[in-house]
Image (cartoon, rainbow, N blue to C red; front, side, top):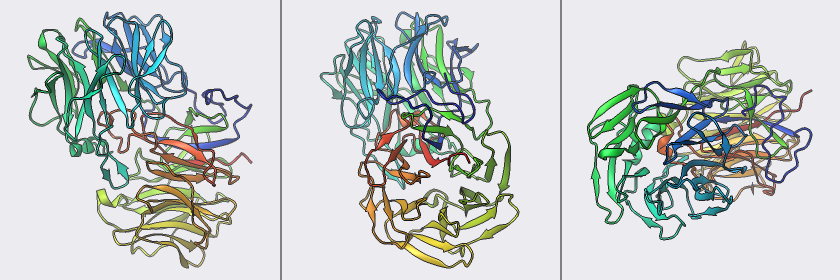
Length: 591
């Protein structure tokens, strides 16, 4: 069951085999693009008369029917992390099928009901696994570089189709990584794996047609999927198509603008799917007709075509949330809060108030319980981003202007500080460039920040009293997210010096550069523990865990929270899900 609001609740989710201490040693505030709450619903085939299926405060999603129509398989975080469950259609006989601290999702029962195919990150990246329900035997079928997603059994149970980004071009849109997915098929034991599509774009969510010879799936261009992943939720165009598994011959089933997702084959050559957008909902082909309107994510239809299951967000909590969040290591207690949250010595939290840093944010002050909330700074024309408490908790530094220049256009942004009551705002920089992401020195006298432009990138330190500025790093490599060690001896930051974003530290005088992380995938959003013994950060090293096209409003639907020693040792994973988890910040021990 999802843990309740507040900081005082110890998390139950721990690393496998680890013995949980009586009290966590550290606490971190983290942001996540996950829903605050989502439930599975059962409805008529056209989406009408939807009713919650086993609702809980946890995240429930990725539901599907068994071939005999007697079971509903779904993913839930009600046990802490994501695992696959099943229950009878009437909600009875709830059973947890997978039990692992890793991410387990996208479960599908074999036609004979004896095996479960599902996606798991327990091997390091997302692979397709099978579970024998009688013996409990597990088998990794794909075990390949990259991610494998959305397994679908053939009607005779001899084959499994899936999508994968193993051959993705992985283009980068500035800082964010974009994958593409293709369709593959393999024997039910993982042998004879074969690529079916070669679009160098998106081909996803394959489902077998009743004849067992063809698959129906969605396809989309990379730039179209980028539109729906934007927090601005721009409209996109996707299509549905079929492909002959033996010959590779394909036919497009749809045309024209609009989003078409998650196709499902029904009897009589009919196809059901969902459309996106404000007027989206359940749709049918052969013949074409529309069903209920609304949000229908990861839909699945019963074998007789009479009912459907799906998930949708049911958020009732105000944004940003302040609630306990599952952690993979009991030494580190996690609190889900807003984007770029930092804590004062007394436990107050300051954060950006919107769901994404690229939106128009104000600076929000929240008490430790998440109850009392007050906007201490807002500007009608400028984004106020990444607020940071001073060591004494009496002032807040933040960036103000326009950020994400490659998306929103080049513009100046400044570093400003204000008193905690919001009464005294002072701008520390000259307005001549794009400055952002400030952090305080331990004595509260200086602020380190970054400059980003097409010609120049760097880290700088400004004296708060005199406004004197000195250069820490200056060059062509992109550098960002500087954080001052509480010991005062080093500053951590992220940089793409070798082409991949990694963590580095150096002394405050700009000397003694040291590299901390060495893994494929961006490492960023770093933060020091209060004792200076750990650096928390976000990493994309685990890759994508699902087709990113299925996650609207998620600019980067990948990335988990890790901690590492400043010398690069003891890398430990704290979160493991399909959403972007980011901007970690340690919460000081209570005074």
